[in-house]
Image (cartoon, rainbow, N blue to C red; front, side, top):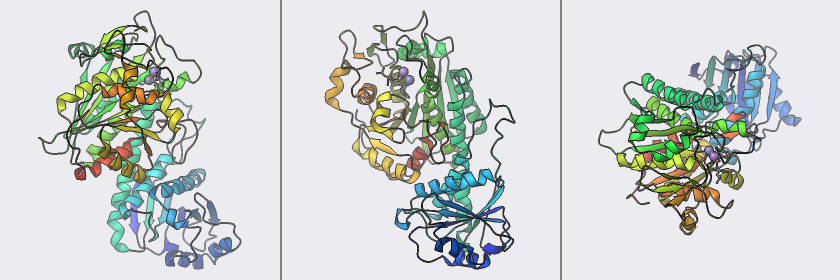
Length: 512
Ligand code: BES
Ligand code: MN
Ligand code: ZN
């Protein structure tokens, strides 16, 4: 894809489509648009006058320019109210433009960049948001479809930005490139989640990690622990979950070094259940096919590491991914079984479907050896978080108050929303077992489970820590702007934004 930015006259710009944005509460046209209106023989003023187009968020109107200007089509793009214009609203409006771009197989599109920018955003950030949304809206998952059945969306080959200020040219290109890279990274994560469980196995995730390291030989290292290595590490919880499956479990370690050698790393942990049947505590068959996305935590971690390497972020990152299937068989764990986790703590498995917290327990314990400044885990952990927060908010738990603020700031910028959840100490009694140190589900069934799961994980942590429950947000069962149905790849853009600002954050001393 080629990006160009220029201050050429709008009516002379060669493109298949020219996109110009409008606000519903804007009384006057920007000088750049006024020029366009004149060239179009006042077509823009007249659709406004007739109220055929008002500029509401996501509203689109396609005009045929009838050779009055160089481009054959102009798309009027509604951007809502000026004082509500955020980066996310910009993405939402671009998603609407994207459906027109797809329908007309537009290859060369030109965006008119007005001086009005989304709130709290730089030129780079707003261009980045345009490209992100355009490419993520265009995402399709087609490897298993006959070629002619649903033809892939038309490839956009050229994106132009028409500016009023020449000084912004380079910044615009920088933002566009960044948006492209992030969209590609998120698309890779979506692919991993959309691939079925018979393809996206633990070995497949390990191969993906190895490919990442190969593509960035200078900055990313990979190490895969196989069953024997996992045994040597005493990861009894991961082994227990995997014992019902014929697929080999893997424990994937990725290392990205972007900071000083001695700088304490940030560890990212991702749940990698490549299919969650529930095991002996088997799930109902309705929607069970969706449980192939129970590895989106793993996909998110790999995406963050890829993006960090592409961006050369000045931080050190470690990615830890426990990967296995959760299946019933004659060898599978049973309710009542007691296992010993890597930490030494014993766990009574009361429900084999609460497997995510088991494999994460070993990974969170393993993280201690890096003396991390911060650990963030990403996990499609509980159905309860879906009930509590729906499909658009990530449940964010943290053992230090000061971690949530910066995360929320990153959420506001990226549109990957979080909501703070409590690590309620008084609930810890519900995960105590009569027979072992811990039980893997609450003794009070069915209530507050997102909190119990987080409290369970907390038992394995002695560093500043954020737990993101992405069960509701990692998969879309309805179309959302720039997120088609299926795996969403949420968490990558959020965390990259968070990491970019990390220097200013003091994580303080380790607590649990
Ligand atoms: N992977 C599921 C959580 C999940 C549910 C993810 C819905 C995405 C959508 C997890 O392993 C699980 O099964 N959790 C159980 C825990 C329960 C047995 C305490 C749940 O939430 O039902
Ligand atoms: Mn489960
Ligand atoms: Zn699961």
